[in-house]
Image (cartoon, rainbow, N blue to C red; front, side, top):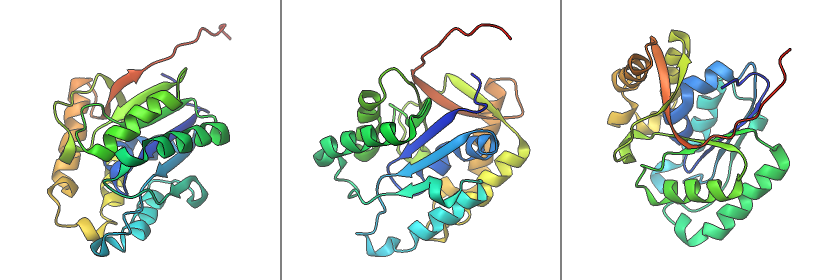
Length: 212
């Protein structure tokens, strides 16, 4: 799959989801793609999470995502199933505004109710588009990637640096640099590369092009 020059949309339910699942890939392709990252919930109804939006913006800046392409909305955490239609309509609005060619959302193996809704509605909103699923380890169940994208050691280091911006989650096991690096090394090993990020294939749309 050629990412060069493509419009690529990353959609996550909560701050940190996109970086956990795709941080190294985003750093790798940000200079050559039109990358848009959308987080649907700002988590601001939880008084313990008042800093996470600013931490998220700092994290995305480390990955090279411009502030105007790092969008955070206000859907209520853990209430996505009740707001399913509104989520769908919002994703359709993003399709009209950005016309993405490749979309990354949560893995279908993710059991978090918000993550699950994002993926199901994205598959409806982006019919005719390539849709790939990323893994958030704390809520995955049976995830095994079948699509791998090579990333560099620098990309891996930047993913770890980006997630270090989340002081709120510093004690969470899934923010451990050792775990983050080990996952990228494992995915790399599965694809005979040094480092890679792995994804579910939710839908791949291929097109024939004439040779140059």
